[in-house]
Image (cartoon, rainbow, N blue to C red; front, side, top):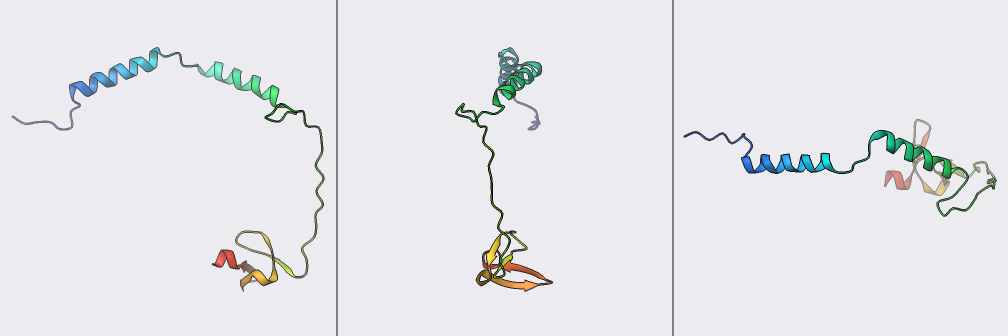
Length: 100
C-alpha cells in the first residue's frame, strides 16, 4: 500500500480546525474599533510627554560651523578631527572608524 506523505494527518487537521475556531470565537477587535482607539490616543498625545507632563518649551540649539581642522566623513557623515582621517579619495574623506 502506497503512503502519501504530503497528506495532512487527521490529528493535525483536527487541531488546526480547533485552533482556527478558537481564534474566530475570541473577542478580537475589528478594524474600526482599533482605528477609533488609535485616534483617541493621538488626541491625548498632543503636547504631552509619556509621563503626562505638558511640554511647551522651544529648544534652542547653537550651530557651530565646521572648523578648519575638521572634516566630514563621507561614510558615516560625522564631523571628525583631522587626526581621525584614514584616507581621502575622489575628494571624499573617510574616518579611521569607517575604514577600520
